[in-house]
Length: 634
Ligand SMILES: [Zn+2]
Image 1 (cartoon, protein in one colour):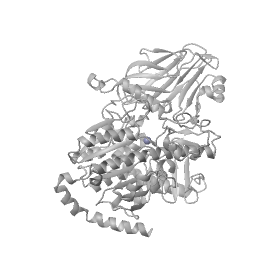
Image 2: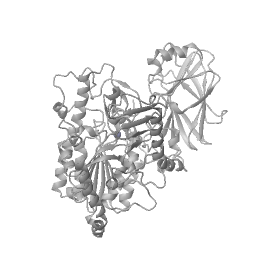
Image 3: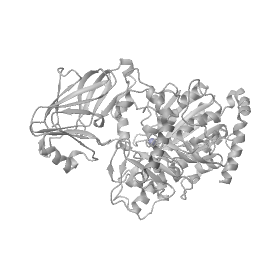
Image 4: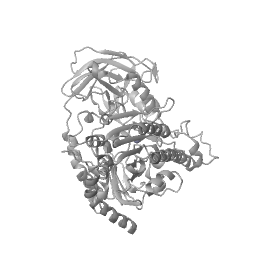
């Protein structure tokens, strides 16, 4: 602790003197430091040597950490990419989810469609562009695509792909970056590099062998991509490991992951050698961070998503800038990914555009006594050094952990300690209130431009037949309980389990029509229906339903045949004009007996030819394949 205090003192001196130093530097524009922000998707802090890991996963990252600052208690503000990336791009706890230009994947909660980015927000690329920096983005993530709001602010965007892999590896990405650097940097640049190597699939590679038990038979519990054979439980990569997952299996999962980190580290080391050769290394603010961590068997999970447990929110943050960040700085107080952008602004001395504000702070201006240095937040959790509170927004379930006694977050004390639980919840709401207010006030004025889909979770249903609400991970034909329920009487079943949600009608005789309603912004859309087909399900033949989209119930209807054998049937329902910010439709059984299952409605905004030209359907199909391989879709 004493050591940390001394470092902080030195740091304080640097920060206090910063004004004078910057006024000198800014008079010589070319002397401003470049920024290279390397994002290791799904990298956990505790798997790096600089964070105390005992395996030799990160010699090159550790060497950089020695020469800069390590934020020992850094947290991401989201549990998966879609939640986390916009958050640090804009330094916002609450921000509209910025979905990609992909016709197939972006399931949306309707609320998100009614929001814009608030007018006080500015992205990292926006800040540096305004300051005269050349801004460039290299991404191996299939979600960052042209036309995407997160990409638009950059001057240049390079999507790095590999033909036979869901993502380009770090070596390939750094090669592209090096080519760019060899020809381009005539003025200070801000570069964001999104690497996917620590992300699932954790393919077995040369580096795996450094950490794995050579006698372990990995083929029984892992598929050929290095994923534990388990059960998909959510749309954001959540995956349950098999019930009989042993300590050896877990060790192997760890070895695969450590191999991914070690591989990323090797490529990073080569890149640093390149930067030194080009005399760029000491003129560049280097940043290493992650958008979230990864479950490695904790809570019976692999991949990420789930709840805000430390495995997914405790992420690395390492910064190096000689002359500004003293070597060996170790920051013990809490920092968060929303602090990254304000910290980069502080260290480079660029100005924040007028009227723009960040939710986070420059970490070098915090002290251990600052309120924000005591807490880490996501939208549904708050953590201090001693405690963590989590609320499940879907079920209302609350969790409270005493972290010193229970670092693995296994023993939920919420019921036992209602007062403490309520107090932490109040603190969380208080600290998030400004961000939430900005988000709530940022109401969308124009219709969405990109396709989206609304999953069954958000449907409001009405029918003369009973509607049975359930929450299940299983699809109906894998679950005897659902099947018997459906057969017992004419009933519509509504599964609201996120990621597995559906409407199911088993029509024996007398199943009444079902009216479905949910919020969609006004506009004109080509509407489709995701409705899996099969010749018959448990003896019930696929059959014909009449669907009348649009609020005009007397309007034209479309016949849907669920008997066409296709696991992912997309039924085109034609062009629909949505008014009163509400989409309505009626599902009418025609033949008996029969069945229908609906997972979501897709909405493709009707665009002008110029707008439509920006979205490439072949690209979208290819991206879908990559996202599936990354565990983001089935
Ligand atoms: Zn991610």
